Length: 88
Image (cartoon, rainbow, N blue to C red):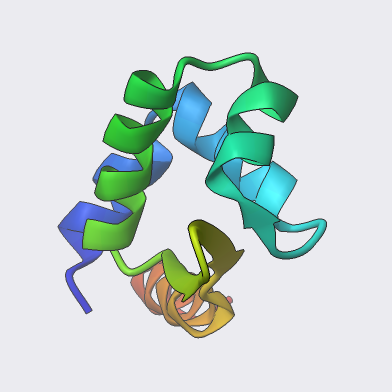
């Protein structure tokens, strides 16, 4: 796990909004852009940062790309933060 990439990805408000939307379930990139009021270019930039941190993953179906949360990486990040706190 590259914790610096995870923290970098989480530091941006737009990327946190994307993660909150993905919490609701799998969504296509087009629907995600509409839901968040983002241009496809801006969304693509933020999605690439989230993918680099392994916080999301994509699946392709026909001409569509769908995104979902990668909860295992979020769990690892929480464990790392708890360990940093001393497990309290």
